[in-house]
Length: 493
Image (cartoon, rainbow, N blue to C red; front, side):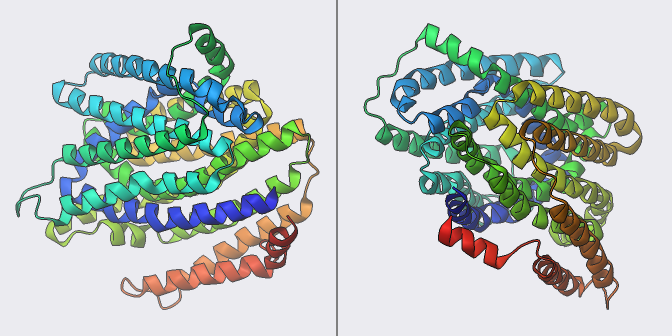
């Protein structure tokens, strides 16, 4: 199973590193510059608002289905027809509730139009994830990998035309609605593709709504739904609270979006681990196989670059934000926004180590069915995050939201490690902990040396590259990452 994890992870990472970083850093970033920070701030806040309610689109069905199909492949044909119809009905409920809640919190007609379209996009996203859960549950990881980058590939093509194809007249701003329309087209085409793939794996397809079956599935998936709802709140509510609580909320939401963009990019990579690990953990646990070695392998592969990324972005936050967002046409405004977004970015990127931990141990606990403990953890995280935002946002604005997020992520990650240790009785790996401590200490030292070694605004990129290479060498030097170990897994796993 470890060999299968490594080989499929390699393909998944290759495809996603090829497409998604360019999407976030090349396209999404350019769109923010093209539409303006405040307009993008409105989009970012409303996108996160629609995210808060998207539990109604799924109610935990995707995670339940991924685990269930992985353990019982023969149930795909039996379950797919009824679940697909149920997803459509949930989408209708979700759109209606989103409109009502949006109107209640004060969004006007102009905002509600964008909310409806973003809500429809959320439906397509969750439909794709549900369809992919069937494909991953069947262990068709190569097909799932290709579908995972299809939507972004289509969006890149459309947005390149919007940005550089003379779509907008010189001197005019790109309308954020065109950006959202591009997403709709890409998600729709991807959903159709994934649907056709799943159909090819079923013996027959006859769409029908089975009331008793739907109620049974919803009852079984309810704990997953509650978990997703609670985690969504403490991951996504920051931008919404910024936009609603502050008089300059649109600008501060845009600042937060600038700092969040790279975290979003790295999160995509971490998310891929959970997509691979959930069906693998589920199958191993069903057959009572020991999961400790796979947990160690996955965590080591993910946490080493996570530590390097978090610390590197902390030291080079101003340089990275300047590279991404400096605009000669609006020099004064862009520099002011960079000055505000750099510390926000530094704090948010430190969240990545905690998020990486969550994607490994949270996925393990989900596969094991520890939903009560996970829901208690997530509820605690949501309450802490909202309370901290209420306290910190009025005084520190976007920086306060970032600090709130960091504290919440660290707390919830630690709780998940504790819960996993309690349930699985893992042996305390002192050697690994020592290596992680030495690696972290070394990365801090390397960053300190690199940023003080012939540093200038023009040459910082060379210092940054030196830092990345040196940190990679350090990881191998202390044995945190082992080439022999990886080769042994590939050969005998």
